[in-house]
Length: 69
Image (cartoon, rainbow, N blue to C red; front, top):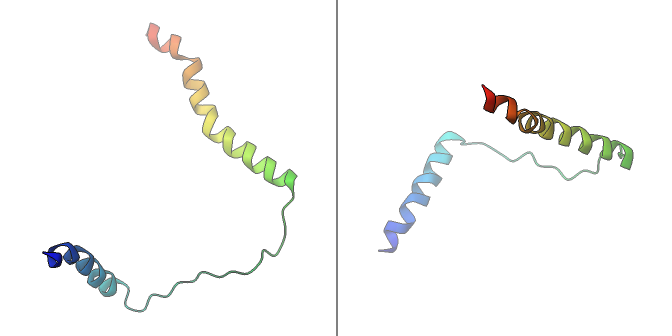
């Protein structure tokens, strides 16, 4: 019974070895070259929020116009 549960993971493992036979991880743990300050972080967060929330706000603001059509 346990062979049935192990089979999908075994199949996945064999598939991954067939696809990436010599794949190595390229993760490094070096410190950043330049530190960013709180102003750059705040600007990045505001720009990110604006790009996500502006289209949603536009649609919500124009719902009455869409309902009239």
